[in-house]
Length: 267
Image (cartoon, rainbow, N blue to C red; front, top):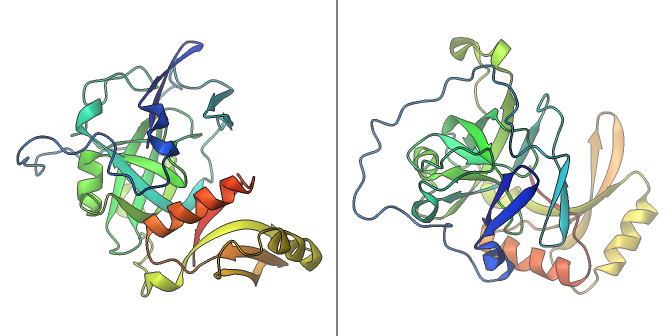
């Protein structure tokens, strides 16, 4: 959930090393002081915009890991863990050069072009919002998107700090609110569908070799079989997991074993 700002070719990091801890993290920046009425926060309507002059380098590096900015958001869809950032960064410059407004429907993403409009659905309760991605992050372990305070409030993830979500890119040229497909339904039993996937192989032997390499990491380590686009894949996964804190602990253990490629999967 660390913030990082791109201006031209230079990078400024704010609270960059907060994500190194393996302990559960509070939302980055915290809520505003006192009670806030968010009922008047305006919804976002996707519109065609040029790529931001700032925040779209070919690649950049944070904490020793290189990220490659996508040339296009077309077809992007991912399920994983969302976090949010708030008061500490309110008014500060985002990676796109705009000021961060925690009361606006915005978000941060590591690799989507800036700006990109995305649909975000809370998989636990089915609530859905549209946000404009104008910042980079989050860089805390296994988060896929960092929501503004207002956006997190609309999805009911403020109190827990994180939530299981599905994120889908929106093409403004095709966006018609009344004709959008319904958001995915909330998970009937979230505990059964929350995993950390560290590999997916067409060859069972490769899956077994990776599993052997991680032997003793956690009792939930297993190989599962799935058919994806007509192909049988053997997935090396950890889980099912009960909460995002458990996922953080396991991801930290994976990093200590030299495994930096992983993703959250929600069945």
